[in-house]
Image (cartoon, rainbow, N blue to C red; front, side, top):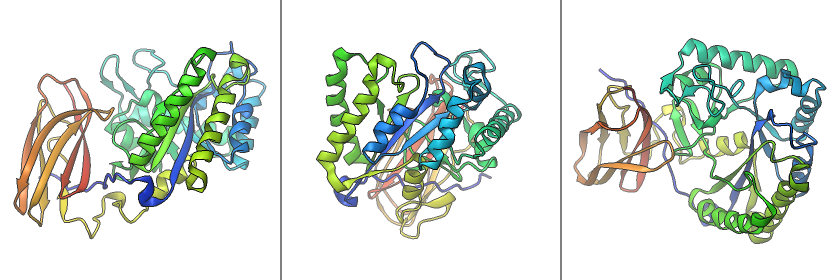
Length: 371
């Protein structure tokens, strides 16, 4: 027998429906080991955001706080100050380096060798990282950003056991990706290795993207990376860019623009009446989506659901980036129990999402293909 797990609704809320646009600024890899851009520090970027009334979520790599680059404790003091000013610190892994292959582009799940680190290993990294943050900053984060946006169901279990309730990673957003763990995904980054020549084009692209995806999702999360936040990078190019972007958004949206940290925004969406918290049932929802079985699976699995009403149903499968891979069901259904087989033969190991829509309401689940 398998256990029923009801996940959250995935609403597409327009700006006009909620009369506001939540805007989140997330900066990853604080702090970077790259010291070629100086002076190192988060203050110039933060000041530019604060002048416009904004907030920053700093995704901090805990181990970097005890490395040689931070022997002076400068970044530590700046992070302590940023918390006092109402900004947020999210935990960004442990040291952003994979124990399996040594790659610095991921950590909790090895994409190079398609290897799942054990619960014990991931729990030890998480616990040590939390201790560093507590010792250095006297702070315990509630949000987590997976290094490289790569993690698995073991990671989600570790995080919930460590009392994390918010995660920010690619894939389906504004929903629980694991019981008790709510995801608010980033949208886009525009300033990675930005030069003066593409400054204006990047600004135009960003404003267009905010209009499109912000209207669609009811929020927009823009992504930056250290060291490109530093004042010395291209004579403050990125610092000037974020200031100009926020000025443009404030002029366009006025009072409808709401600056939030990652955790505040995620919890507001999570606790809104349209969501299903911690796997409990929304009384207005007339169907249930079950966890696929078996899970993990290879190469096929069964996705089941129950509905009390007749209607039109769609069941689709997506990858971690939100790309649609398969349509398993598309048409009328009767009330009752339904099961659909998904065959992933020929697909790579990893995490996939399935999304069920019935009469305009949507529930989603997450499954792991292991080979």
